Image 1 (cartoon, rainbow, N blue to C red):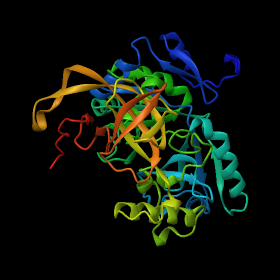
Image 2 (tube, rainbow, N blue to C red):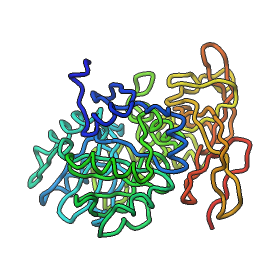
Image 3 (cartoon, one colour):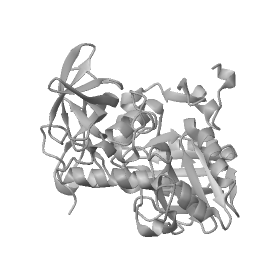
Image 4 (cartoon, rainbow, N blue to C red):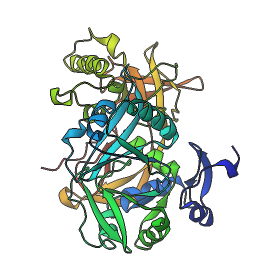
Length: 420
């Protein structure tokens, strides 16, 4: 696709002018990295604050008396549980219990809902929701992707940076998924404590496209570091967050990945009675039952959820990329869905005074779709160009439970102490 055919965000000229290495992503001209490089962008986000242009994401608005009932039918989470000022992670399911997309649903004001979807799936999602919505009374559905820009501010310094430029009302309450509406440079800004990096201090801003550049410049002047797609991917991988087309959607064998293969399904899917019937519910109930039985050591329902996504720590010397085969002994048990080398800060101090030192290192990590019978702690190998690298199934790569810092969990080291 030629550059002239690529879609451009309101910040596209800024990326070009400031040395962004531009690539095609989902039909958009997007920065992969800036001159400092992916590793530094990753580290700066974990230590200070990263600023991401995410205006390529789709933003769909639902209004009218039928909006809530429609969203309950086409999404997996319980939209009826959202009060004004709350958001939730959710999925757009199909009848088989696979994901058409994963998404975030926001309720900033009383009479409308805003759904943020993946850039590459925006048209597919719109077509699906439009098709279902034709039979739905009193529903108004609008694509605001081209009129509403979206900027993500992530990292320990984010609250200080944003609080210093935000006029009344104040920041959203300090809890995940809280929402607020404020003013920056006289412009109305929708603010969510959400993000795709695993950072415990995180914000996503939605504002008119013609104001995006001024707000972006102001946040950088306050100390935020611009971050491209490369570090966005390493950050989300370290946090164990799924990427559609890798941990959700279709796997390397061309098979559909069940939604409950992803650990975040426990937050994204509501099977409570009050949720009622919705697309894919029966298949998701079977997947959820299988996942519960696995925890009890019962694998009689394995056929309903044969593979699940797990984090892998690569202990051998090398990097496991997407598609790399995973073995337990001589048995093929799955494949890597996402994998790379990521940097991390080494921490110093104790208790509340723990903070990143000036030293950092690299580690090879991955997410893999593997046999659901594999357990945390099991040794596996990954086949990298004919060589077997040692790896181990781990619970997670990152601990975000004690703000303001997300701390790496390194295999063989004591895990970070949790807050009391």
